Image (cartoon, rainbow, N blue to C red; front, side, top):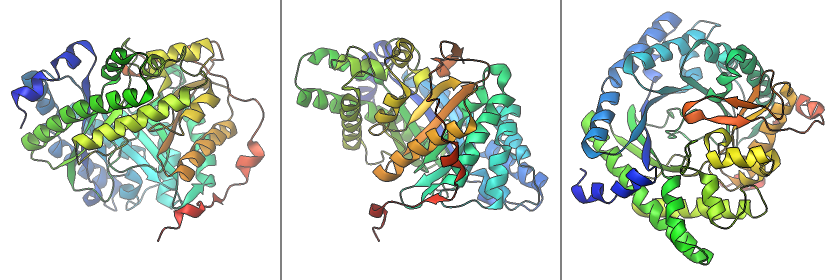
Length: 452
């Protein structure tokens, strides 16, 4: 249970520094919804989600009102649909996405994630059907999110899936051209995807999870930025300790909310994901944290080192505060969702290549990056392969959320509104990687994957 001291200790952070619970996400297993009749399977999916999450939104709103802690999103993640739909006798998986969207609308949640496939070592027919259905599914549903895991440290990189995903991203952008490729903002390509991530668009409910579970994502870039203003000019030892102590307080708040939601919903508590997830609001930026450390502009030399220290200190502070820290937990660098990143990218200081370097040391990867609409599917696939290689070799989660905005070029800006923000169109290399991508096959797992 929450107590008054726990709440009072966070009031200043909430009122002045943009501290919030970014999401309460209910994970729901759909393995018991498998059916050879696809229509019946979709009915089971709708019924289970609406029954399981019928009180999720009102419970989140009640906690928010009672304790004064902002809870920005209430979300649902489900078993990767390729595993569920594979039992059905159908070639068309779009109705499964439609069932998810209907359930989302009925429960009132902000997003539902899990139109997903796990293909790091190979693709089943069900996996391929789902992947090929993604453009239509994301174009015809409102707030369904999709993800595909194409690599892992243990399995290597499935380059056939990488090639396919380059085309899928391209097709998704074209199918949602009237919204500047917004469908791509709901699609993530992973390496080393985790099963308990509460953040969209990459959330899905892993097969090793319980039937239902509550995962909470906490965010507080503004709180960390404010804390660092008190240690200007101090050595990095002091900076790291300051971030750790701040992350500790943020995580404690997240755990308290998660436990309260778990108790009220009678659903097991899973994890707290302490990720510094920014928004386009001024004062809620990861880039500004890095600049507070002494960088003139995020993206200049020294940025990767600053981000590495930030990410490490956030994780250390989180694990001191809770034994249930999970998900991704660290710092996110989504360009369109971070006011400081937007400014740095618009000025030309923050480039795609620098962002790739930064992903070696942060929580996720190349996130919410808009590129020219005429970027080829092969170039998109090559960017995915590069990012997957970083994750595979470094035994970490990496991801790509690219938006080839139809009709737009470098110098233009695409605006998605809300938490998704706006992004300058960033240049990509013009030299072709088509022959590289055309090889297909699988890049083998690295030597250090052999730990058995």
